[in-house]
Image (cartoon, rainbow, N blue to C red; front, top):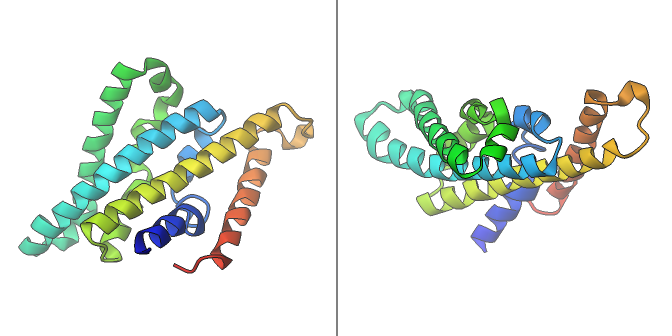
Length: 192
């Protein structure tokens, strides 16, 4: 039951994008098409899950025992940067079209505050290794859900009559705000 609450809380109630507002850059930049939103979501999910596992082990078995917990942020960023490089190399080989579609946003996963935020939150909330990985994967799924929903809405808006003054970024920001308010409605359903 604990894991179910953790998953529902991370995906819906405390959605990393729409409730905590972490990872907004790729949310707005890559979400114009569902296909690229799915690709970015998959890459971010992989990086968040592996980064949380690696950073948890790094914090628990190296930083804390050596008394250098103050190096957490720098160490975590280095781990995340290495993982993103690995994802970039693999994606370039496996799906060159997705690699091109993601463009500059793929290497920017390194500086995506959602990835670093989840790694740090896992340590701050004192999750166990298993709970931390469950939390990170659920948060990444929430990230993906928000990205795909937003991309679908943006694709639909392209086919509709939007006033000239609102086309592009203005309607995207309005839509993002409404989507965030919708997700904040889940906070009354589950208290985590």
